[in-house]
Length: 101
Image 1 (tube, rainbow, N blue to C red):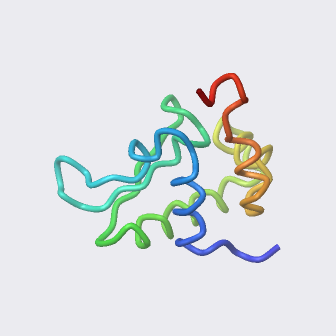
Image 2: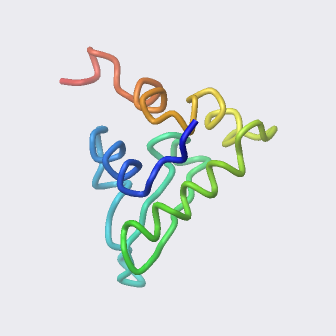
C-alpha cells in the first residue's frame, strides 16, 4: 500500500463533516493545525501543528503509522479504519445517510 501524501490526507479530512474543526489555525500559537479527531473522536484526539497544513498533516500520518496494530483506542481505530488506504478511512469515517442532513 502506498504511503498517503499530506495533500491526500487533507483532501480526505476536507471531505468529511466539521472539517474546519480538524484543519484550522491554532488560536494560541497561530500555527497550522490538523487533528486526528475526525477518526478517533475528541477523547483520543490529538492536534499536530506546523508552519503549513502539509507539515501538520505529515506529523499526523507518522502518528497514524505508529499506531497501526497498537493496543490502544487510537491503535484500534487506525487499524479498523484500514489506514493507510484512504478510501477505506473515508468509508469508515463518513456519516451515515441519516446523519448527512
